Image (cartoon, rainbow, N blue to C red; front, side, top):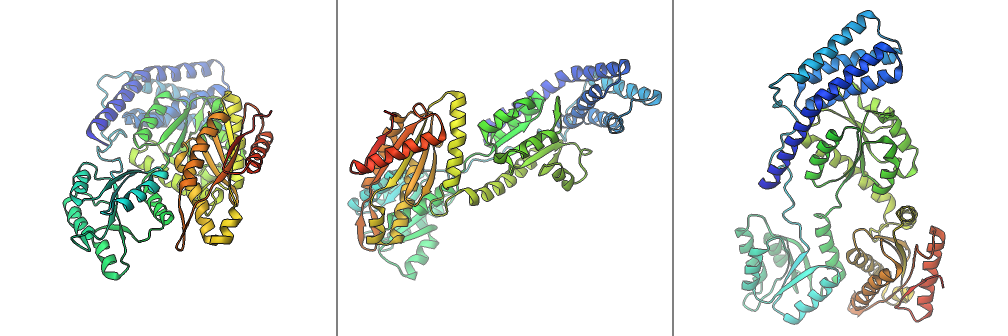
Length: 553
């Protein structure tokens, strides 16, 4: 976190603390009013409301810097909880005790000079969340053979990389000083020195605060050159002629390790101040956060957001967190979504107790921000890894057949509800059997991976891509009508037809055909899929290497 961002974040935290302080007298007055109501007419619903109000003071008091208030509220909460569990009304002694505790809360809430606790959960180290300094989609190609360099750059640009070419080391060095986060493709041999690229990078690495990532390219494949490359900081080494598919695989691996879709966190809590507090912390850690303050709106938000993890408060108006968790667990799409309860120290005694109540874990308030972020990161990373094994195709990394069909069903429901356009495209590699027969199945696999990578890189992040089976792919394009989708896919078709694929010493090119249908003309999943498949068949019949739209005519 940079100094300016850190200052803005701390200012936001201070505003939230002020907001809690201003709301505090009203919250205690609500507790007093509920107790008075119970004295007039005792019933369990009002007792539950009172308990929830006091519980919120317990959990949020320490978070916002009022430990004394929290401790006093905790004593009252235990008394109320005992009455709830026994389903009895307070006798005279208990009533007098409760009244005294309510008055104590009221007194501390209006006292002047309350100061924030030094142990409050708002102090965050300035450098806790530094952005990744290596994040880049920029490639520097350093090669004295201008023609070879431009051909390599052309192939890289087809896959969505930004490329700059340098035929001289001095010009490259100047550019690197201004953009040190680029990935470097460095030829080993230069006219004046057979290991010029290696020797130059050794010098460059010594002058940099952070090592630059360099991939060496060479006609030599012996230990002396490879060892020299490693000493110069190489992350990979390729021999000429370069297999562009393998090179792109390596570049994708490097960039994928530094670019990850933000974690999607759903927080369910009826307190606007608490929601704002946790949202600020998690957004500062570059997570995407959605909140639900009204439990009755949970299902709609689940469907739209598809969270990686749910943080659930235990006590809310109308229902409790455990009931909401049981509702979620009865939905197939969210059966395995991690659910973590936001609890006080007296809510659960052990993790198994929380798990028995359909949750996965619990975090005790006040939650240290660094610990909150660490807990979410570890759980989401693990959940994503497990889910990835189930829903992704092993060869391409795209969604598999079952997963892409499930996504289509989900997106059709969403688009129909929001009345927004949606297109579905079926893509099939032309004459794929001939590729396998001529060049071998390994070459065929590389062609499939090449198209998968191109689709991922050329489409938007909001588009959903899957391997439908064999050499066939499916693309879901949200907020896009069929004509617009056809323009995008046709551009990808044109780029793909210009890519060169290598098999031993042979180079060859490949085309694909595509059929597209949209929700405006086909109103459900079955008809939409069938229409796109028919359009694909028409593209094949018309000579292949075409994109055809089925408009229902």
